[in-house]
Image 1 (cartoon, one colour):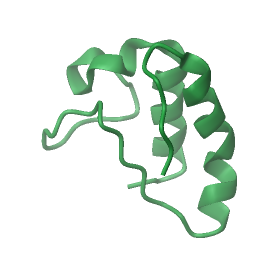
Image 2 (cartoon, helix red, strand yellow):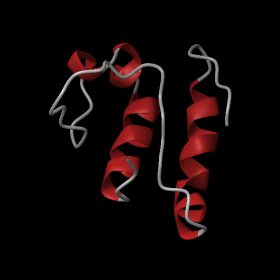
Image 3 (cartoon, helix red, strand yellow):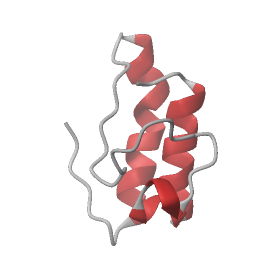
Length: 72
């Protein structure tokens, strides 16, 4: 579990830097409080419609990378 401050994008950059290693050791679930609970959301293009902070560039890249790696 990671805590991050929405006003400090480098927190998201730190989590982003760990994604590949986490996936390699079998951690493949990423829960983010900012994502809306809506069916069929397309995480390949993070936009504000799927979550408030997804329009922040680093946070958007975190979501995009997790999607590419097939995190649930």
